Image (cartoon, rainbow, N blue to C red; front, side):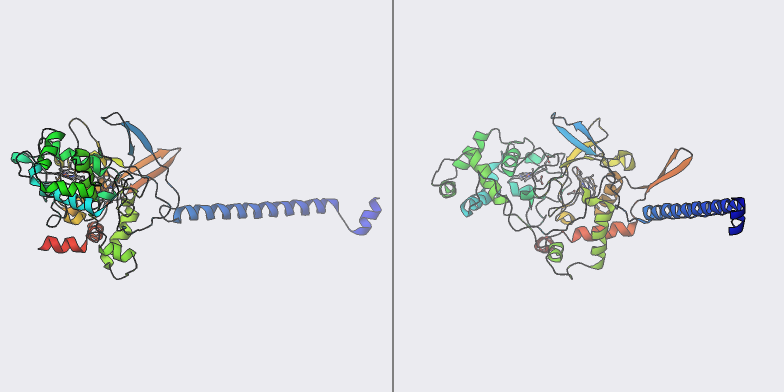
Length: 403
Ligand code: HEC
Ligand code: HEC
């Protein structure tokens, strides 16, 4: 046995050493491969474009004063898969119980401009919603109602309101029909004492009889319900989709300047589209199922307390996300009209709603130091976003505001 092995020249001791060497080399190769894979994953994670990995949605429920649950979103929320830019359609949705007819639109227009429908016959809807000069608002911080009374809210534009499923700054009205009755009865707006009084003021003008008959199948009865339906019908025709943005999205690649295009990119990248998305740039519009009401200011300590954005005794209030169409024409801005510089509104949004700031947050855990940075927009970026917001202005209204 021993002789045979010697004859073949094989030494078991040598063979064993050779096997060990092979094993060591195999181990080294395996370690190298795993390190390579680890390095690859590390590089991928660090070089992935922002938003590549979804940040989890953090929401907490808050009861509003009316007892209905509203949702407050943390400012750092998930990015929609891919933002789609859309133009505004030329026709607004119409509720089944109020079909749109030309006769109803004509009647609604007359009612919208009728000053007899305020207590002292001094104001019409159009007094605070000047369609041409102030692009559907009144150009004031807060509105002035009958007998010079000042309210505490800025007048939003009525242009494109037909696309919003929540109306008023706090979103309390759910349709134009529901909304239309409220200013008549508001003591500091048109100050009418009752719905019956509004009906009487309409009835006392004989010219309305024929208009109601035409609008409502020959029926001449005048009711608050019909008044609201007619006004809402007229408002559904107040649409602007002639902005440079709409032209761009419809295919005219020269419609936006490069500054506006930079602003458009930033509008998406910075996260404005979390809340101002869809053809009407609002999560509260009929196109999207977004969260209609948002906390504002979501980060109150980062903005100037002199603006007094919050209601008494609260750090944060919940507001409807407004549309940004024609926003450059409808200053002063925000629910209390406290800000009269659009650049400042963008700075406020970036701090208050997106939590951007120069401060860093450090996280120390398991002997590792993490840093969270969400740097503020630069002045250049603020200007670009404002340039983009200006691209949402109707060309016709820009022209009208110049006259
Ligand atoms: C005294 C000024 C004034 C008058 C008159 C007035 N409004 Fe307003 N309007 C406002 C103010 C201020 C708001 C915001 C109130 C709020 O959010 O609480 C508003 C809100 C609205 C909105 C909601 C827009 C949106 O995007 O949420 C519509 C629509 C509207 N008014 C239509 C009308 C109609 C129709 C009339 C006549 C029946 C009318 N307004 C009369 C000042 C006025
Ligand atoms: C978390 C939701 C949210 C985000 C993100 C957000 N906004 Fe807003 N935005 C709101 C709400 C809510 C209001 C209404 C605030 C109020 O009641 O005054 C508003 C108001 C505005 C207004 C004033 C509208 C008016 O008619 O007065 C502008 C302009 C605006 N946002 C632009 C932006 C821009 C630009 C960004 C990105 C830098 C942005 N928003 C990010 C929720 C948001």
